[in-house]
Image (cartoon, rainbow, N blue to C red; front, side, top):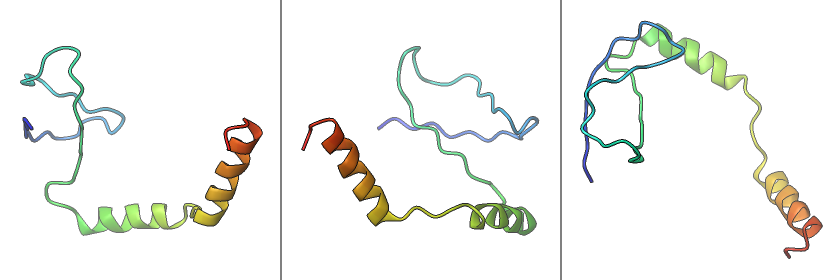
Length: 75
């Protein structure tokens, strides 16, 4: 697997622009973004935001998926 690592400073949190990538047009790549030197306050703010998100119930997800498939005559 070919990997490329670079560091950027976020100017606009709505987008990240990367330059001079060693990949060709049309190639699919995986993008992983992480904090280089995490700010403990930022981590606390992120945790507060994500802790309030509803948690998925795996049993309910399976039941819903089964119902969807049965409705499509796939089971």
